[in-house]
Image (cartoon, rainbow, N blue to C red; front, side):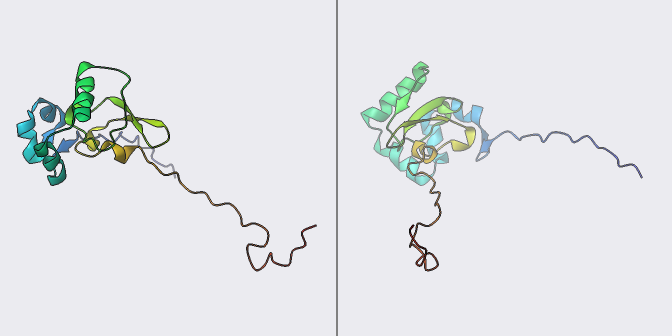
Length: 137
C-alpha cells in the first residue's frame, strides 16, 4: 500500500490587526485618533504628556537614524516604530530588538529581559544527605 504524499501548503500568516486596524492604518492615524484604541495605562501616559527624553527618542525614530540606543524601557511602542531595530538597555548591556507589529502599545522594556535564566548545576560535596559520608580524599 503506497502512502499518498501530499504536499503541504505553507501556512498563510494573516495580516496582524490591532482592534480591527492594520498596522498601515495605525501608522496613518494621528495621535488623537490612536488614543481611544490604546490600553488605559498607555492612554494615561500620553494624556499626561511625554518627557523630553521620550520626545527625543520619537524624533530620532522619525529622522531615520539606523543605530538607536535607549535606556527608556518605559517608552510605549508606537505603530511608527514597527519594523525598526532599537537597542534597549537591560541594566548591563544593550540588546538589539526588532519591533514586530504584535508589540504595538507594549513597553520597550518587555522585550529586553533584565534577568538571565538560571541553570542550576549539580549539588556540591556535603550539600545532600547522601553525600555527607563521602570521603574528601
